[in-house]
Image (cartoon, one colour):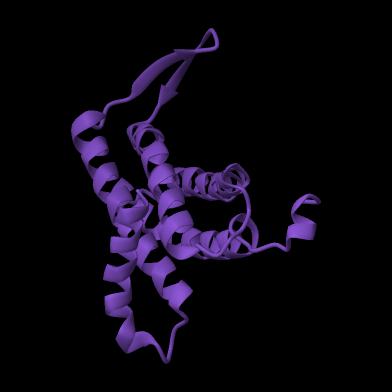
Length: 171
């Protein structure tokens, strides 16, 4: 997998050259990886919403209780774990490679930032689709713009930050 990460990094860095003077390399890599993962998210969401869920309500029985998921929320629940894992992998092996935190700590911190973004996605979709009447796929795209900023700063300064070896045991 590290070989794949090196090829992805080389590919991204090839396009970085014209942006060297205006954008730090890490930010450019984050943007490229995030854009790739975002496009994957949008494409999967479109496919799942339109062809897997098929615009139908989904009824589930969990913990002895029946739940009804609207199609746009069901699609979010199906796509989310996939893009969670691809996003973590890209951040760990392409963008924030200097972090010396243990991989599991990075992953748990990453999940906490993603949980905030998931809440923003959930309530944003509820607001835009169910209250404002905006179509689900454009709603997802609008919400993504908000979550990008939350994610970058959370991942840079929390999930993948570099710590001194002395401080690593205290956090």
